[in-house]
Amino acid sequence: MDITQRLFTYSDAISLHVPGHHRYSIGSLQLPISHDMTEISGLDDYHHAEEVIADSQRRLARADEYEARYLVNGTTVGILSVIHAYKKKSHKKVAMMRNAHKSVFNALDLTGTEAIILPMTVSEKTQQYIGIGKLNPNAKWDEIGLAVLTYPNYFGETFDIRSAIDFFHQKGIEVLVDEAHGAHFDISPQFPSSSLNYQADYVVQSYHKTLPALTMGSVIHINHKSSLRREVDHYLSVLQTSSPSYLILSSLEQAHAFYRHYHDGVFHHKRQSLLHALRHFEVIEVQDPLKIMLRKTGYSGAELKQLLEQQEIYVELSNYDSVLLVLPLWHEGDTYPFDKLLLRLKRLQLEKRQPLNASQPLNVDEGFYSPVNEHYQTVTLAEGIGYRLYHALIPYPPGIPYVWPGEKLTEAHVKVLSSYQNVHGIIDGKITIIDER
Ligand SMILES: Cc1ncc(COP(=O)(O)O)c(C=O)c1O
Image 1 (spheres, rainbow, N blue to C red):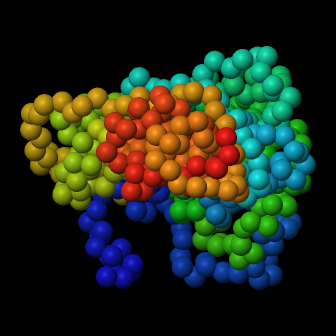
Image 2 (image 1 turned 30 degrees about the vertical axis):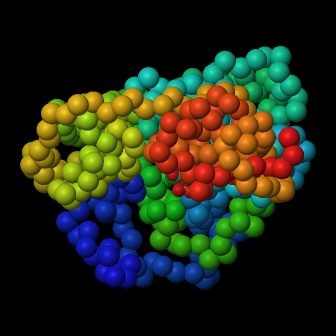
């Protein structure tokens, strides 16, 4: 089957996943295909905006301290650009979290930048990485020039980002916040607070994930005080196309207007009805009301996902024992098939089961990431103890790296990894290590 045919098979599917327009049912996007245009007179130059794009970007700033740029290659390109800009001016390391997106690793690899991994905390509710553990104020912070923080986590959980930003600023370290999952933050007082309120230097938000914008549409907010403003602009034009999609740009502008004028009354009302319809599940609510996790004793996440898909309800992801829903920002006049969703949820049949085995804890230790450019060899897990890894070891599920490239494999790591059936990075019993200790 080809892509086009495959897409038509979802005509009756209900979205509880990104993008935030939920199949064109949220917001009132005006996107006629005839607006797919190029940079003719009057449509400005994306890489050197001075007219209509520049005007629109001025209205996009969320606070006086920031200027904003439209991104047509997602938050990915915002992160790549900031780290490239940083490397151009600094030889220092980066500090990062264990739940960093792969664009962070890719940027480190592409620029040959080393990173320290910050100690992590894990959420009791979701068993996911959530924030930063206790930081030693006397560590060698002068070796670090940029901290890359993931806020919120994928599952809608937040941590004290304000204190984290203050800590790094006091050490003279700039902060890039990957706010991919928080473009809707501050949309009303019931939603969490954006890191834009706390003087982060660079904040990248995936508008397309939670606001009604086209996929790939993101925004980077750059603080006027940040040191890399010009360099970031330079890399945005190096790393992005010279033929931006005006449909994406226009959808971002419209998503921003949606954000500005949103009232959350309908949202909370519908969310309550949904929670009632989900009462036969264990429902895990987090700080972001847009995210909900579902569990059911004895069911794996993959089974729950399949059960919902049998009713043509599609979720964002499944992991060991749960599924993640991304709710729409429902509003007066949306066309989301809400009644159909409730009807389909009623049809679900869940049985009583014995609990699954408990999942293994995540690695929360401080660590080290080195870009992959060294000699390597393959050895068994036991032989690899004491060596630095060339490829990450990622138990699947949950699909979260347990030991990263550049980190030393320990006996304790091997003990935990041996308890998983499937670990990406182990092929025919062998792992890849950097061949010097
Ligand atoms: C935490 C995080 N950061 C960045 C990204 C990349 O965002 P985008 O798809 O907008 O490039 C993702 C994508 O899922 C993500 O989960």
